Amino acid sequence: MNSIFTRRSVRSFLPKEVEAEKIEKLLQAAMQAPSAMNQQPWEFIVVRGAENLEKLSHFHVYATSMVGADFAIIVLCNNERLKSPLAWQQDLGAATQNLLVEATELGLGTVWFGTAPHQPRMDYVREFCDLPEHMVPYSVIAGGYPKDPDANHFKNRFDPSRVRYITE
Image (cartoon, rainbow, N blue to C red; front, side, top):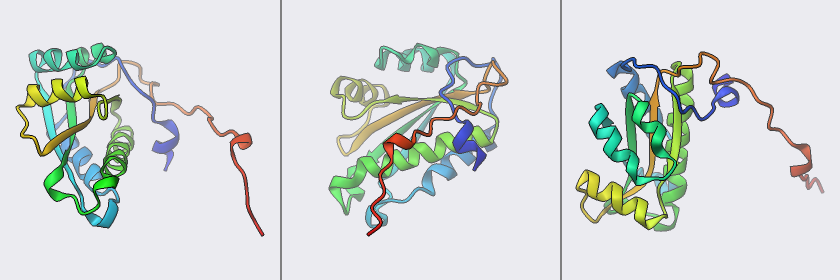
């Protein structure tokens, strides 16, 4: 559980390739997420190669750090799998978070770039991947080995003033 507390957005990466086994572990973790009615609407596209990452980085004004990453993972919703159409963003949020936490566990750094529901970002990713209409881009995660070995560090964000208890 330490990975939950030490995960941070990492935007600076070493020029070191992440092993295929670690990428697969990230995808396995994402697919372990809970989903409404067990619909598991997710699909993923792994993007590698400097030219591809540079081109993809143009989808979001703050995605310039993707250029130095080793990979990006695009998290998609397959609308043809929806049993609970109003819950897909929650499902994919859980999958994205699982992936981020597993990356920290594996010694990787990641940064989550929000995509849905911002239509221009979604359209850019859709065109970049040549996606059919039933595939909806939700998020893009860039990752690699962090330049700063202490990039994933604990920062206490607990604020008791944001908690209310109802006991009786």
